[in-house]
Image 1 (cartoon, rainbow, N blue to C red):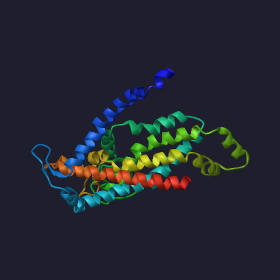
Image 2 (image 1 turned 45 degrees about the horizontal axis):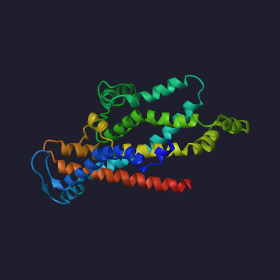
Image 3 (image 1 turned 180 degrees about the horizontal axis):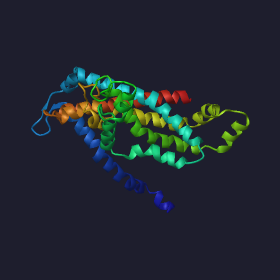
Image 4 (image 1 turned 120 degrees about the vertical axis):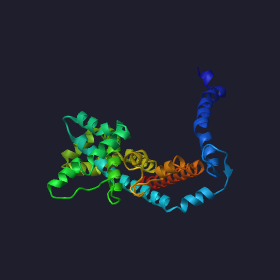
Length: 290
């Protein structure tokens, strides 16, 4: 066995299949997309090379700039609202002694539901006439709110629904890290007179920073590629109020007048944005850790 592992061809045989699959399903699609991003093509007829015109058209479109702004709002909401709530809920569930498995299952269920189901469910909850939220508001004499049809409320509504769908997945991740910590440290801090808040803030949270970092990165990546919940609930409306880069891509590449070249250009822009944001966070968080 040792003699076999000393043969370099053994490692070549092990690595080559993975490289072939990686090249076939990642490198090749990325290369072709990168090429078509510089063409004028509807996906069916012949294409023509137009250079950087697709990128110029995209960044000169106010709707796309508004979509970038909405993506940034998704990121800000995810990092500064969603992640702190995830940590708080994980700490609360970790502190309970009874029915902990029930709580974990309950918060995780939305993450395994189809986005179509989530969109239809919340479409009913937010319905201006029969939705339970407006029904409750009517008891206080508040007029019905058009949550998904009013440009003022549409984006906050989608942000909340998207957070509700994915928070459970991240809560389970952080909860696993908390439960893996040695109980002796928490018990020692309790004996020394530390309150529950002090134990959570000064002991638990610092020890689970690596998994929090992973959750933040996943949240940033998810905010950059969010599209399904937007298409199901609002299709980017009303009047582009909930349009994000990915939904703009779908509407341009697969709309009434499809422009596949423009769509691939947008996909490259999304990829570069996600890569830069992740790299910036990694570099900043790494320095903080040092």
